[in-house]
Image (cartoon, rainbow, N blue to C red):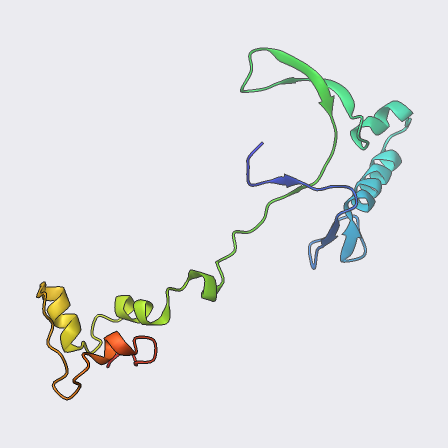
Length: 150
């Protein structure tokens, strides 16, 4: 069975807005759907036996299957269940984004660069300091409060 499908338990609840079959309500349990399906099959069959209910219960209906993955017939049981295939959701914006400053640098190649950025990119080891700041560059002192384009 493909990994991206999950079998639904009988007590799990579905909400099907449109395109419903067998169910008048938009919200219903898996077991209610399987019961409605069994009722439709029962109405179509001339003779209904307890043995036929194996299609709809946990026990299953005895059968043999010729599968692609095995050689020959394989004995087992078959039963009707509902599968659920989740839609791959996009990650939340906050989870997928980089820290604000780093993301801005990667996404906007035309952003105004500081002298320190240019010298770091060019491989200079001694980036010039602000001549009016005797303590060093402002980025070293207050890196978290400077705007992106300082």
